[in-house]
Length: 323
Image (cartoon, rainbow, N blue to C red; front, side):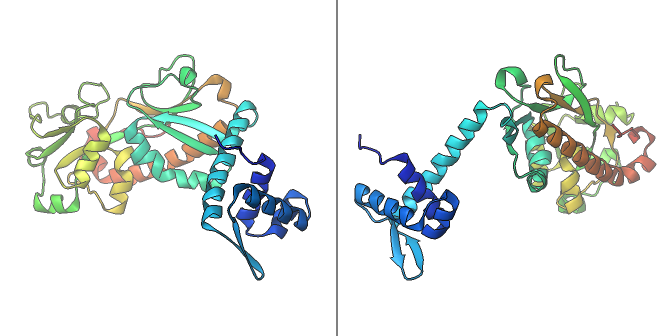
């Protein structure tokens, strides 16, 4: 194994490489410009390669310099993160969040850039999993859960209610216009098999039952293992999916999807913010929770606009979305 140069020399080089300037590196490290230059020359002699091209009035990294600078930058960041994890007060820099894959991809991820704009100092790690993870065992700070709100040993607050309605592409709706429920379920229908029988009332059978149409059958059609895949199939124009408004509101607002028959029914499950008690008062959790609630309010406002036509058309579609 080759002998490594002194870490201080490598760090001096990393700072100089970042600035492309010995003078700026000297100012950051509180050393003289000549000391920085001497340290870099010593490192180049030890490695046997040139790291900088010393041009008139500027510096450029050589190919070897660029490769070393890139690896050092990654290593320094990794070391910094590891050391920060030793200090409980430094932990606010990293926030671990878990939720369903469908919620992560269709609701949380499109909104995360807004959180980073507000709080660039917080690093968010999203863990998408179909099964509810043990926050204590997995060292996860908080979860966004879709359920009935019974989560013992955690601090729980409602984030938002939800409802479902038929969605498809505008082209699909134009090619197969549906003026009635009978015409709509003639298909092709897209099913979220994970919602069938989970008591969330997010499946086609539950939708028809809530609309008072127990007489109609809705078994035919393609099936997908989760809501994300089902919505994705609708985006591809494969048929009509029954989408949770939380997951399709953005697609409806952008015109990627449309509602062929504006009849929405409430889900039995709602979204809850679930936090480990010992993490609830940490700055990172407080800021993220507050931001989530603001995003939930914005989503609910989209829901109300999209639902107004259906609420007038069918009294069974009315439900309280506040919370």
